[in-house]
Length: 243
Image (cartoon, rainbow, N blue to C red; front, side):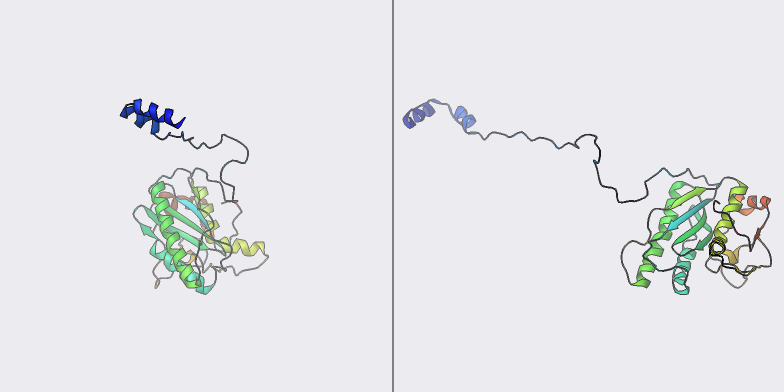
């Protein structure tokens, strides 16, 4: 038998011998995603679903809310607010972005900003977030994320909306105190906000002349004058739940 195979191999041409001993190419089956089915894809981690952001126009201010990780301590302490406020002051104005009002609450920040475009808004908020996160982590001696999720933005298009948003931001601490049935002095202005620089109070308050503002001057008509059509804001006003 072996002699017969040897004899047949001698009759083959060199090309035929090469083809006969060439290794067989195995066919590779491409990976597929398996089709649409229940439970397919990355498992949900309970994060807020991504939704399209509202369009941003330079003539409209934006109310932004930034939520921080609940594992962080209360931000309304002298030490931590003393870390956050310089970050806000340093990032209050850049190309196409201005921070006009803010308040720092226990685990979230409220901002009212102006932006030339959605890209400028995102860049401005990112700059503030990165600066705050680095300073807080360094102060607390920790690592890891500081902000719990991406920011929430609401475009303000009317004088009434703008007035309500300003009151909601600057008086947010008074609103929370009211919910706890805690009474505050009528002339009290939240020290963890930009309220001390606000010139639209309806009450006995004068912005400090010896302190550099931590916010930028507004340029949109709505933040400069439009909101005033709905009257000035009382210092002891308690804003509603929906600005």
